[in-house]
Image (tube, rainbow, N blue to C red; front, top):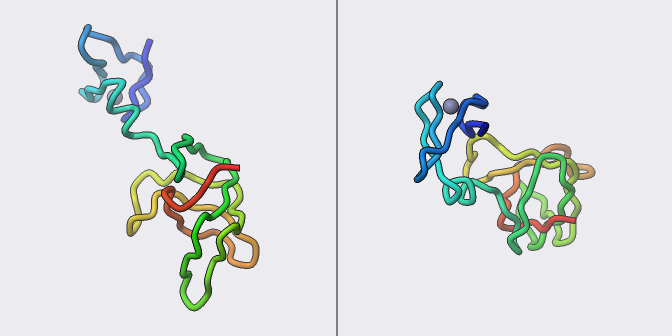
Length: 106
Ligand SMILES: [Zn+2]
């Protein structure tokens, strides 16, 4: 059984060239799954709950998030928000939006 990445149905099946979901009609492949992964600046796959550090100084309103700042318990966003694809908790700032391309998994 294959889990549909779109609707979560467990009745996905392999027809030899791609995977199909009988419940929502979604069709996917290993390649599309690979492309859908959220990766950090060095290519590690990121998952909900990971801790990361920020790899470049980043503007946050009037403040600067310094390179090396830790963001804890990240969450992968379902949809990108202003080019940001994850959020995480940073001391003194709380939960903020981040880009996976400027973080590194700890
Ligand atoms: Zn589905």
